[in-house]
Length: 172
Image (cartoon, rainbow, N blue to C red; front, side):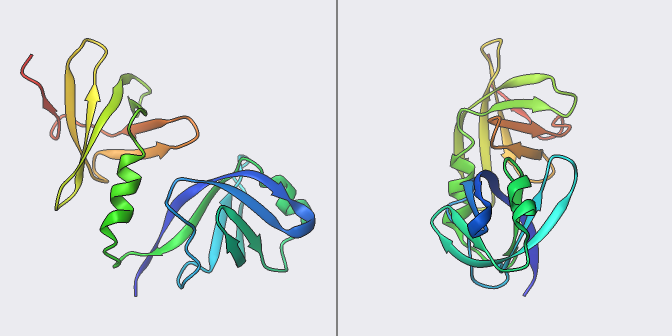
């Protein structure tokens, strides 16, 4: 079984006394089955904390003993990652994540605004996003790693790489 680390959301609030994190999820749920027994919390100062999951109740994650109260208190606003089974073929899961992008701002890696995601399309091979440009036109981009550099759920922003070879523009 191969696993890869993916962003599952951000820490919305903390309860240090109970070692609890309330997570604003970017996915449909926090998986507790192997290999997702660990969370990786990336704080704003670059610090990463690996935490064992004790229990999950919806968007509340209780961490196992060993994480200090001070460490939990610092986690508010941090980005949370988990290991997921890379060989899993849960089609609904990636389609749900793709649908979440509707309404997000689309920018290139230099920060230039390209438009807003107005529609998402799920296909057999991969998905696609339709981007409404400021000038009234639209772009159709494949939702693949070679195009999408990152997704910032907090800011509602999709950062794309060099899209010249992938973009399909409307005929306007």
